[in-house]
Length: 268
Image (cartoon, rainbow, N blue to C red; front, side, top):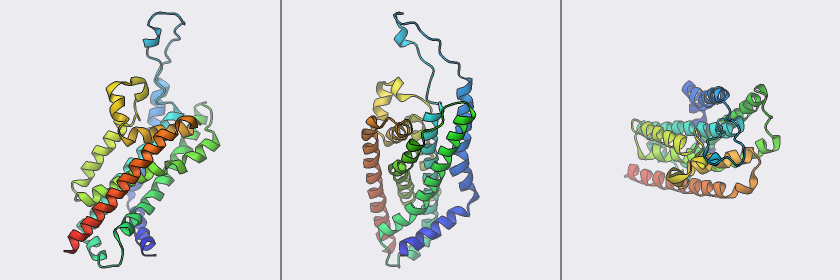
């Protein structure tokens, strides 16, 4: 009950901030539209007859901006802004001594973390649903096949590891850094997730050292899992989903650990 009360307070604070609507909802939708327009201006690569030497090395038309690949990537992109606002909420509560006063209550470190995860996780899910619906509408408006309803419905619950990952990052950074430093750290994560997650480029086609680096990070697997589900390619889903889940559990555990340590430090 104490956790739910705390979560209710946090979601009210989020809803009172108009900037959160712009970034958490507006930015993914804006980028979805912009990248769709960009994709429409890319000319298709000419067909290369079979048997031509070197034909396998000719770059094909990029598919990363096609709506069925772009929509899941933009859903994950939106989660990075949820991470930012989670971080801002936690760091602001710390700097304003709000949490210090709450430390006198019987709440434990896990209660605080769950109290932040529930409202911001709910926000992430609402944002993801809106992004998928917008992507489906854009697909129909541009003459592309509509999304498979079953795949789209299944993709929402399977975003849970990614939601926990980014909200966990936000809580951990909010605990470890003050409200001046925390946004900069989150901005760096947003940039890394965008570039090394494969939102704007086809990492699988590029291969090489870059793909090896991205394969060690959760962002690439988070985006890849979301894309595979929406496209119905379930036979390749297990590995990226498991890796993303493992990272989300690790970050959640680190966030709880950091919160407990900070509580103990502030109480002394």
